Length: 319
Image (cartoon, rainbow, N blue to C red; front, top):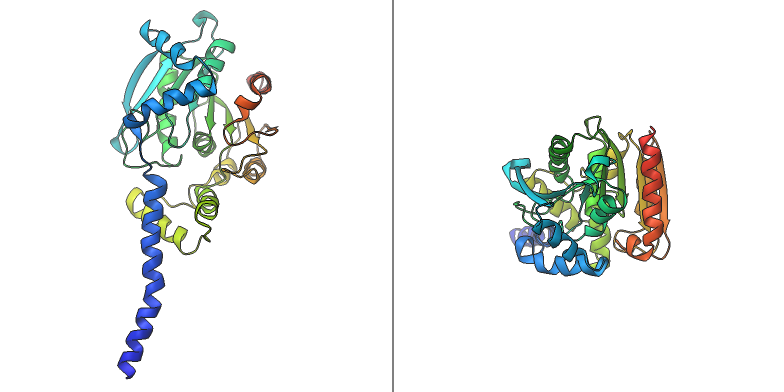
């Protein structure tokens, strides 16, 4: 009887742990291995680009067909081949600088062509816009949520500087691309990387997945998120809590513009204040896009968006 009781208690105690481990593995796969992805998802994202700014893919195709817009591939972090496109300023002889535009989760270089067009056609910047790992034409085992992606973007900054040689570069990301931007901002960067624009980025991967877990499954973070983070650490070398925008922002000394829609319920609006408060050194600005849902600030307020970025860049150049 005693042996039976001990066995029963052991099973009862082990069951939640086993359930949490299995649920954590599911959560890790669900979050970091979205499907479709990569080349299989190109057509959807081309349509998305046109929905955000009509005519974007025709603009892209025309420049690519004429040889002005080009593709390039480099060896990125963990030796994966990563892809980017680059295009010179509309008037190359009077280029105002270089912009790196970084897409969001499950997107690719096509989606934020409205930003590429803003920088090239409106601001007369040279622009490089990459596919992050596991997205677009880039290789990769899984989405890295910006944490490891930042190392690839730092390589792309060097590539862009090698092409154009500008002494003013801005990194501008949306959603996961914004988190990549903030995570990059705390690293030791070359002097020509002078400014950052983050649009609706999350404060950490842990905070973002905690919100998603509650919204989608109505579940608390423990034990599923803890287990998923352990799985991620084992597979990819990083955990959800260490992938933190706020910790990186605490080390950032260069100018940054923070943008967030106050109707964003995917990356909750509360993340904006966390991120903004975390940057304690150097110049910073905040713009709240009234009524904008996630990654919708430009579509909701295109003129104001352009004006805020333009004025921020002008200030950053003087610093």
